[in-house]
Amino acid sequence: MPQPSRSPPRSALGSLVLIAALVGVVGAAFAYTAGWLAPGRLTPDRLVDSLAPPGGPALGFRRNHAKGICVTGRFEANGAGAALSRAPMLAQGSFPVLGRLNIAGPNPASPDASVPVRGFGWRIAAPDGQEWRSAMIDPPVFPVATPEDFYALQQAAGSGRPERMQEFAAAHPSFGAFVNWIRTAPKTASWAETRFNGLNSFTFTDAGGTARVVRWSLIPAAAPVPVTAEQLGQRGPDFLRQDIVERLRTGPVRWTLAVTVAEPGDPTADPTKPWPAERRTVEVGTLVIDAAQPEPEGACRDLNFDPAVLPDGMGTSDDPFPAARSSAYAKSYDRRTAEVEEYRRATGGGR
Amino acid sequence: MSGTTIAGAARFTPAQRALHWAMALCILAMLFIGVGMVSTIRPIYLVMVAIHRPLGIAILVLALVRLLLRWRHGAPPLPAGMPEAMKLAARLSHYAFYALMLALPLLGWAMLSAAGYPATMVGGWALPPIMPRSATLHSVLWGAHHYLALAFFALILLHFAAALYHALVRRDGVFEAMAPGGLPGHAPGRVAAE
Ligand code: HEM
Ligand code: HEM
Image (cartoon, each protein chain N blue to C red):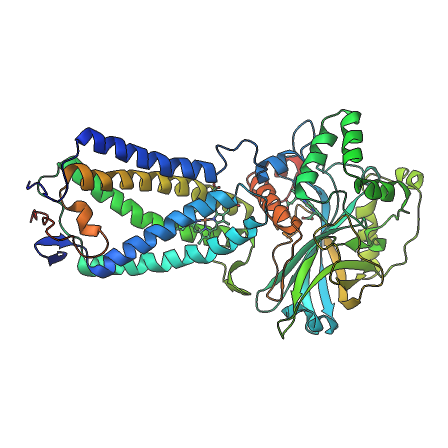
């Protein structure tokens, strides 16, 4: 082999050391990016782990809002939303809906009365394949202002030490509004009488390119009938499911989808802070549910109601939750889809 | 099969070299974005996901173009003085690179399809699903995407080390065959084996 004459010969050992160093630097940068060298980073794995009860998660089930029922129906858009967003499902029309009515918490066997928070995940599909997914809950405010605080709350709640919760509440004053809602807000005995709130804020962009920050709520068509916690406690463990199946036998269940527009200075990044009641609110259509399916057979089981799956004309805002939720929901989804066998064994059915 | 000969050096064609370095950059970026996004819950998560999908599909398209160029123009021969075992390792690793460049984007796309996520590229435009909805399929595809991506990075580290070994220790022209730009002044050509 002819030796090149272009550079002064370096010792082979020196070159090998240089090569090892360069490879090591690239490898270390990769490990750092992957979080392998950062045990303190709040990863989706740690966030999802923090939701598990002391005995470990229910394998195959959602890591939060584990108990629920699949529902199907349609979204009847009245066209008013087109003034706020160019999303195809806000133009007047009817669009198929797949949803999941649920209760919060990691335990798919919780008695319905034992869980104070109810949820509704849904997906509205447009003919061109675009989707609007959302997962909403019934409190008017979220318990914590940031995803990091959410993690701290799970850790305090999971510690089994009441003083940790007291410390958390003292350090996070806005937590009080949520606790107060749980203690004092009138309950109902039906998802159909429940108002659901998106709580997180998003950006709507209209056809002209104007962007506005919004939140949305589902207002039930059925008049809420207040019941006391004692009355709920006397019902069966699955009264919510029985109620919705019963109602659907006589006709569809409806909610009005209302979009509220923020004004400059409103706390768009903090779901513990409601916006002033006089903010412009646009009713954009009606969510109609006409059938329910048990989760093991329903199409909602293997769907992730990831709040960051949005059509053109909708996007995230400065609210940090949708990104954190999207990351954590994907992790929960990855885990539960790897546990289909366990799910089948636990439910005695399904695919 | 022969590469172009510049001043006695057997090199890949300029188009092949340009693609090699552009794709190297993109793939490395994809690997870092991939492990970065699955380990964060911060708002940058959504930014990384929004880059990961279309950049991965761009790599799939570029890999097909590259395969075509490779088939049309071939590759310069490896130096005669290279041990047979080393030549075999080089050839096998190149097959593995082509397989991974095609498989990883397809697996990513198939994984999204099996989960029923839209494979959004830009704006509201998404690729159609290429796999039926299935939790079991999603899980298998997820595992394949995850482990093959890590294997891809390991192979890139090996490839990087081997390229530097050719450039700094063996100085046999193998690195120059793929080096970007023109050859430095009086660099020696590789002594072709065939
Ligand atoms: C950082 C904060 C949060 C974390 C870590 C978190 C975590 C989770 C997880 C892991 C799931 C299961 C997802 C799946 O496997 O598909 C879930 C479901 C759900 N979450 Fe959250 N969540 C957060 C904030 C919120 C907020 C702000 C809301 C409502 C405004 C909400 C409402 C829901 C609902 C309704 C479901 C059930 C969706 C379904 O039926 O599939 N979550 N959450
Ligand atoms: C050359 C192409 C690609 C490379 C090198 C690559 C690499 C990676 C890596 C390293 C990860 C992190 C794996 C982990 O640590 O779990 C990842 C995750 C992921 N990739 Fe790719 N990827 C490619 C193409 C694609 C494409 C084309 C798509 C979709 C269209 C895609 C979708 C995904 C998704 C959804 C995840 C997250 C999976 C999860 O839920 O954990 N990838 N990718």
